[in-house]
Amino acid sequence: MLLSELALGKTASVVSVEDAYPQDAIAQRLRDLGFVSGELLTIRALGPLGAEPILVNIATSQFALRKNEAARVHIAPATSL
Image (tube, rainbow, N blue to C red; front, side, top):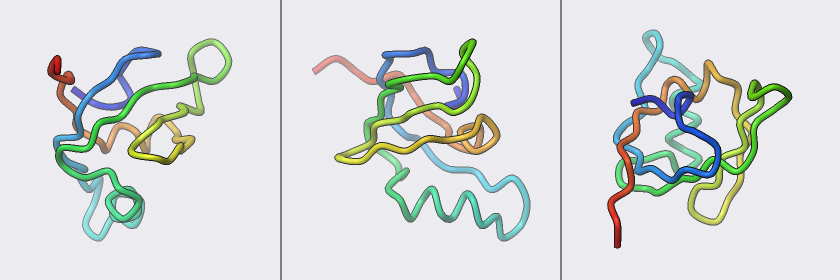
């Protein structure tokens, strides 16, 4: 599943960040910001009509991502603790 497909209020775990093309600077920046395997994230808000931007909480940070940026992040449903 992709982060761009995650519903509002849902939590998931990052599996990987995939480069859209060789030397993808956006994918590298996402990894640098903490979108790494195992990190939990939650969708906190969506733009007008459920569109962009997507407000994501990850670790102790919040990021507003475009859908094409969020589509680089592969996720898995968070397991119950």
